[in-house]
Each structure stands twice: as C-alpha cells, then as structure tokens.
Amino acid sequence: MSIHIQAEKGEIAPVVLLPGDPLRAKFVADTYLEEVLCYNRVRGMYGFTGIHQGVRVSVQGSGMGMPSMAIYVNELIQSYDVRCIIRIGSCGALQEEVEVHDLVFAMTASTDSVMNLERFPLGFTYSPAPTYTLLERAIQAAREEQLRYHVGSVLSTDSFYHDNSDLWKQWARFGTLAVEMETYQLYTLAAKFNIETLSILTVSDSLLTRKELNSEERQIGLQNMFDVVFSIIRS
Ligand SMILES: Nc1nc2c(nc(Br)n2[C@@H]2O[C@H](CO)[C@@H](O)[C@H]2O)c(=O)[nH]1
Image (cartoon, rainbow, N blue to C red; front, side, top):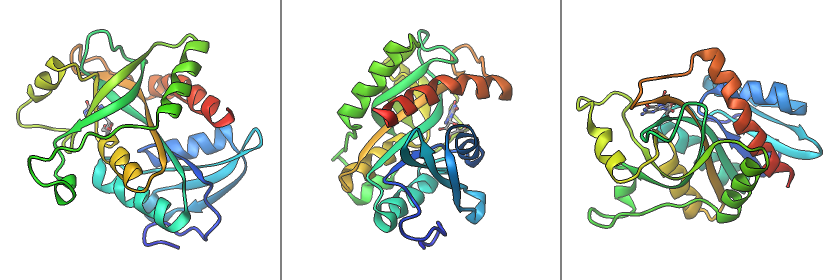
C-alpha cells in the first residue's frame, strides 16, 4: 500500500488511465473493463483494474489540479511500477476553431504552477512533452474514426477562478489551444521517471463562446475520447 492508494502490489496494471473525476474512473471501469477489481476507495479517489479485450489496464481518479494529480502519479510510479499514464481529461477551449466536443492531444503545456521551481530555478523554464508514439497512435485513431481533433499546447493552470478574467487571452495569442489543470506536471513527472504519457482531452467548455456541455452532453462527448484511448490500449 502507499499513503493515498490502498492497493496491494501487483493489483495495478502497468498502464493506467487517469481522469480527474473518480466517478469517470468508475464509468470507464463499468463500461469498458471486465473482471474488475476496485483497488482504491481512499478519499473517494476510486481506482480500478480490469481487462479490456484481453489487455489488463487500470483507471484511477486524480482529482483536480496538479498537486492532487502529482500525489497519485508519484505513488502509481514509485509504489506500483506503473509504466504508462494516459490522462483522459477535459479542458476549456481558447481558440475559435477548437469547439466543444472536440478532442485535444497536448503536444506540450505551459503553466503558472510553481511546482517545478524546486527542480528548475527561476529563469530555467522546463518545457514538458508527451511520448511521441502515443501521440502518433492517438492521431491515427482520431483520423480512422473521423473525429475532430487538435494537436498543440495547453495551459495547465493552478486556478479555475482568476481575479484577472482575461489572463487566458495572452496564452491564446500565443496559440495555446485549451486550458486545464494537470498536464504540465503529469508530463514533468513522466519525464522524471522515464515512463510513457499523453494527455487526451475532451473540450467541455469554451472561454471564447462561453458554451459548455451539460452533464449529459459531457457523458456523450467523452465517448470519442474513450474510443481513442482504448484504440491505443489495444494497439
Ligand atoms: N482552469 C480551468 N480548468 C478547466 C476548464 N475547463 C475544464 Br473541463 N477544466 C478542467 O476541468 C477541471 C475544472 O473544472 C480541471 O480538472 C481542469 O483540468 C477551464 O475553463 N479552466
């Protein structure tokens, strides 16, 4: 067991899907996995392991934001030898062509987080990236399924509510596709421990149009993301 995950060694698969919402982890397990084991209920941050078409995979909630997500990622890697973590998250669009329901594959991330300052002193900015082969397979799956997708940078912010409500516009001016709260630190930790990673995001709101998916639309909209990620798992 680790401090925040009550699983026994071996109960977590080498490949872990990581949604922020633990109820999304339960939905994925209930919908896509067989022979399901619920290995974690601590703090309601559910984790499940099961079989998807012969492939053993786990799905673990991470919570919102990099501090919470980093706790689970550190423990998954260091206590349970996880070798690949794919974030299946949601994001807010920052560009007109990025529409609600679209998919975003994060090629890199910017951040306002200070978590990396202990690793890289001020003035030494670290630019994290995903595993190219996972990104390539995600793009191939999206093309085969004829899904709308975008590949580019995202902004991983520590705050959902900013005093300066126009802050995101500067990031948008430099081409940032979407805003979320986890990818920057996920990619940093994957690089630190030399494991594979990718963030696959469903656009559930737009900061430009103020459109957002209701809870039912979010559920349906996530189908495309699940199709892509399980295509990667099977390949
Ligand atoms: N900061 C921020 N996070 C967002 C937004 N839209 C979405 Br979905 N998110 C993600 O959803 C959660 C907040 O609702 C966090 O985990 C973020 O990754 C947004 O407009 N802003």
